[in-house]
Image 1 (cartoon, rainbow, N blue to C red):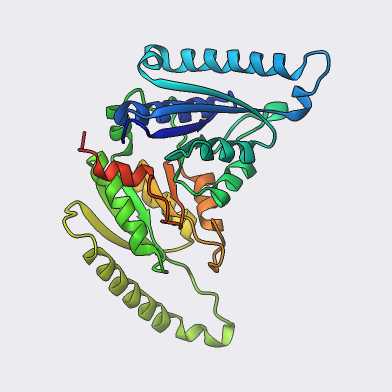
Image 2: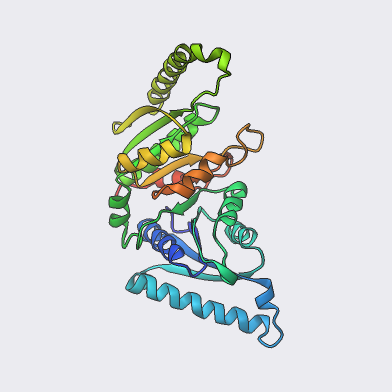
Length: 311
């Protein structure tokens, strides 16, 4: 990345957000990015008259600084850190923090706290993914998170790229392979054939139809893998089953620590994000890098990563 790049990391003081913070720090160290560490106060807490919104914000900032020091230790001194405390709805405030000034990526956890400080869990992650115009890295369920860029690369080991062969798959694969090359790891492009639910009267046709679907999938995979010239560490895989469950299983069996998935545009029949992506986030232990469908923006993490020399 260039020295002007910026990464936004969402924090809710949970153990999951500590993992996200370590992941964001590894990116900041590798690319020399400014790290904007963002937390969001509940409006009800900030409006308590006996405390005052200003005092509440100051307390939250001190807590944020302490969390960073405890989590990163001496690594924090080497980073260009910006502390941001906002008040409002977590997803909206996190996205706004990433817009002004424009960030290259958002890093967050899929699992956060419960109770009054529940910020970045479930629906909030989903809302961010639905509306984000920049890549979003959702950290995996690692016990601690990476302690360095080399540690992050080691944890990834292989990049898994699930595709559905719809429009935009070529761009998704190209961007994901760019990430894999920057990490210096192998890549696996996978397509999952979902089981058919035929009416009883047509079940005798199931074997023939499945064979035709498999043949079409194999042809589409072959064509897709011809697109990325020069990528030598990529292979294709066609599997059969429930998509999210199979993607999580493939990631586990093939030791893929990062899953790169595209986010569909609003007119897609699968929706802006899609239930598969959300389900993968819920059941997989791997980190997920979600790439938005809009390629109009010039500064993105995967784009800048492609221009960087491999570590």
